[in-house]
Image 1 (cartoon, rainbow, N blue to C red):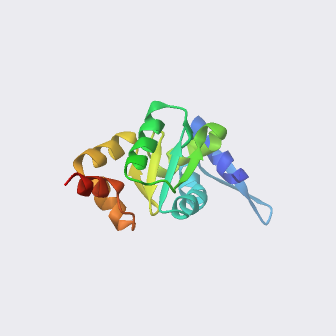
Image 2: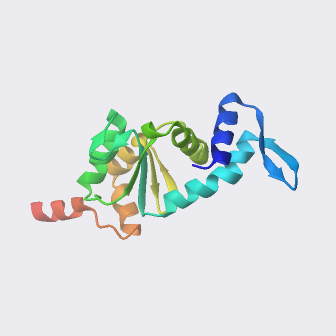
Length: 154
């Protein structure tokens, strides 16, 4: 991640105003929240738009490091969603704090569909249970494997 985002994350943690850089020798200052909204979103916005499904999680899909991340992986797997971008927030503290600031959501994992924030484990589980996840995946051009499983039962 770039230095500007790291600086903003540090300031966010401290709740202070921080130096953001300089233009023509003039030092620029800004609030950390504004900085995250302006500078940090560019990086995260690009990250969440690169793939149809993006998950910021603890660990990796093959080795989740918390129960909530594991639940998200299992829900996606049940629906046949095997290809998605996954970012391990345990590898980079700035990534972990930055995505929380970007989405304005305090917990990990975080799920994005087509660049839009969906929610965390609780939201994805609720969508799975009430059938909304099948519909949302359909909007992404992904056919849920659960539809085929229901068809096989009948």
